[in-house]
Image 1 (cartoon, helix red, strand yellow):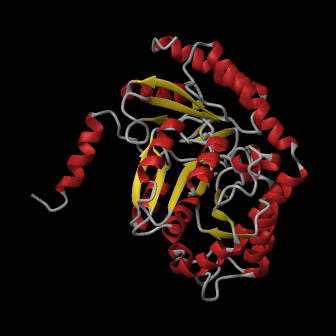
Image 2 (cartoon, rainbow, N blue to C red; image 1 turned 90 degrees about the vertical axis):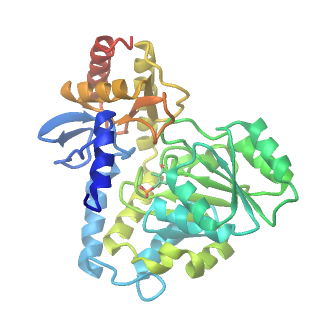
Image 3 (cartoon, rainbow, N blue to C red; image 1 turned 135 degrees about the vertical axis):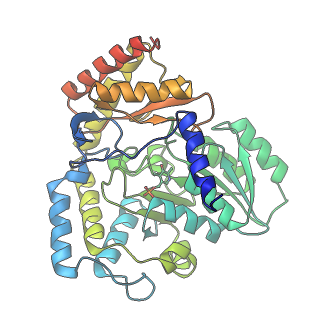
Length: 392
Ligand SMILES: *Cc1c(COP(=O)(O)O)cnc(C)c1O
């Protein structure tokens, strides 16, 4: 027995369960029609909500900053890796989000793993929606705070946890995704904020899938509900609708300055290349000056969602551009995804452990860049394959 035989055995069990997924290769830019493994297909799996990933203005900003400041930043932010362009992006984000200050991390993932441990630690509690993103779960574990979960978006259950934990901890933090990445539903933030205020808890919203999607000019879920100033910490991503890479924290200045000193990925991992920061800044400017991009995203969302439900497919509780087609059976969900790809549509199949057992699905995401023709063609493929697999 070789020491690494267990790796092969684990892989084999994935293969036997029909859950082994080789990596697909994207051979073109991220576009509504993309070249995947040698074929042009309609892309319904990208988080490039506003089509900015391939926008010529972002590319130009990236090239110019690269020419001016170089390909890499050469150090962590706290040594000599804070360049003018990093500071300009953060000033812009703070102004955009109507908060005192903002700080950018290398990714949304590192944001959550770095920020949560600064807010809570031993003797504290995090109260977390059961469907929160993996990076929130990791951040909570790293914090050493006690983790209490509440049933997804269930405010009675949240209040139950709040009552049970009342007076038991030094500090409590309620944490939720703004938009849930596998179901596309929006967190009931007005109720969460009210409960947090009633029970004296801090609040933390991860707006990875709401940045650039919800709120005025894409300011996110907090702004969408008119809750500006009432949520302690907002985390956003620069990797999805913003089209580039990164995560940011928007909140009180004291938190931001403390993160300079205690946010571990900020302290111990190199900062973004200047081109990345410049392209992010350009994207925020475009979101401010071209609200029609977000209008188009929502027009496409309504059109495609209606198309899927008119076919009789189960789209669950989606309210956003993320629309799952829930199949239930894991192997069948993968078959649906595979057959759609043969029909020229790429929509990722998603199974346990990313979603609960028995809730396997194909997830679709439309963008502002899709045309009606793209969406009609995709709907025709769903109709054909859906009938073939007995889903409709
Ligand atoms: C995608 C996602 C992240 C991670 O963001 P990256 O910038 O890709 O690292 C964090 N939280 C949620 C809710 C996400 O959906």
